[in-house]
Structure formats: C-alpha cells, structure tokens
Image (cartoon, rainbow, N blue to C red; front, top):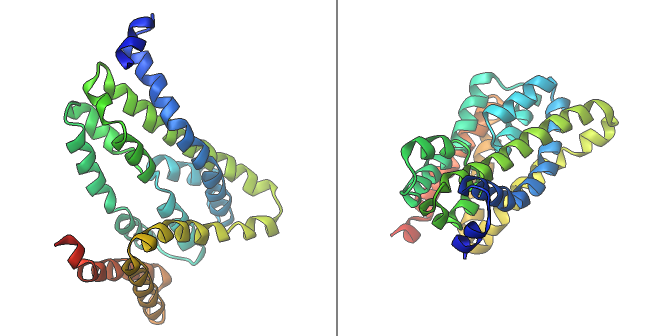
Length: 242
C-alpha cells in the first residue's frame, strides 16, 4: 500500500518518509509539550537560567532525569551527584539503543548511531511499531523525522516553560512541583499492574533513600537508592528472567 502511495506522489521517497515520520511523531509532540513546559517552570523555580534549562533539554533530552536534576538543584546537590544520578536513571537507554540497532539492521551504522542518541521511551516504542520502514527506500528519514519531532517539541516546551516561570505567580509555579511525583507514579503504576514486585522494588529504593539521607547529602541518597533498589530487582525478578 505504501508503494502505491509513493507511486502516486510526485514528491521524492525522502519527502514521503519525512512526512510519515512527522505524522507518527505528532502524538508524542502533543504529549511532550505540557510535560516540557512543567519542567521549564520547575527548573526556573530551581534557580536555573533560561539558557541553562533549555541547554539541559538540548543535551540531556530525558524527562525523568531533568525533573530529578531540577529537584536535586533545589536541595543543593553537587554537579557530580546530578551527573551520576542521571547516568543511573538513564542506563536503560543502553539496552534500548542495542535493541533499536538490532531491529533496524537494514539501516546503515551512520544512521543508527545518531538516531540512537534521540531515543526515549516513547520514540523507541513508536520505532518498534514501524520496523518495516527500515527496509524501504529512504526509510532512515522516517526515524529521523519521528525523533526530531519529539526532540524539538521537548526543547520548545522547555523554553516556553522557562519563560512562563518568570511570569506566572510564585504560588502557582510551586504547586506545579506535584508534577514530578505524578510523573513517576504514572510510570510506576503500569509496571505494578503487570508485576507486583516492581512496586516492592520501588518501596525498597525509597527506604534506602530515606535511610541514606540521614548521613549523606540528598543527592547521593538518591543515587544509592536508585542503584541498590535496582540491584534488588535482579534478585526479586530472577524467576521471570529464567
């Protein structure tokens, strides 16, 4: 069917693939904008400049890590603590990138390497649903357009949120801090519904964080809670892996 559409179009296959990628990425863009705006407001509230919070979206492009980073800045965490915590939280991206490269074997390495840098949970999921595009002419343009649509919307939303953070009343911006907890709960609930032990692992990580925060900075407490909580999952979910 896609071949018929291409034959009917006077445009090039590259243009068709770009349009299709933007179309598939549009729902992600709609979902990213309000979250990115909230991040921008909270980052501004945390004391980051408009340039800093926007560059963080440009270079990090990871919602959960950026929310956590903004929160760690508020509690006075150091740069090393934020970098390590971000690395740990985003470690799953290595697995996603390997899976992405494996599924899209028809793409050359010069495409797969830069595209893997733009993977998020959402773009990875959409790419996994459209693996056949990799076999088509100019298929790489589809994935590039998909990822860039999500990436640019996140940056734009962050910038807009930073501007709003300077305008909206302080009481309103402070109330938006609940978005951080709502986002993590939203990520956790589907996993708990599928496997109750995921909730138990989250509780373990929370308790480790609380205990560690009694004798170390909150930044390192988050790092240890994340690492040790994740390691507990190796044992608790061992049966599923076997």
